[in-house]
Image (cartoon, rainbow, N blue to C red):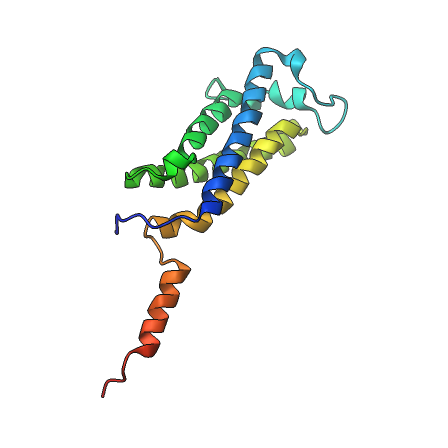
Length: 171
């Protein structure tokens, strides 16, 4: 496996950092309202019921409030997706960013299932975190494999194709 890091477009660095900050803000709010549920601003008499979701049995994973896990996730993702995190020379930091996003999305899929199937309510703030996590995964899936040398980037493929086309015919 090639351990040389490829270039990442500026749009991806900016987008992942902004998404991480949004996820951090939402998960901070959910963590605060875990301690102060009276501060939770959300409708409570319909399918959209944040209190029902954030106080359900499914709002804990292995005894840890899911809000804490979300906050921890976005503290790490904000650091990894910061401009400084993207400039890191260590290959494994960039692998960790991509793997962390995949694991986070798997957990989000479980949480969505819990909300829709088990709890039968939806939390708007949680949904915001889920959307941010999905958007991060999309961006990272687009840039990380090429950055990590797992696939050739489109520019490398074009250059290789042009080289093959312009090579002299062999007899």
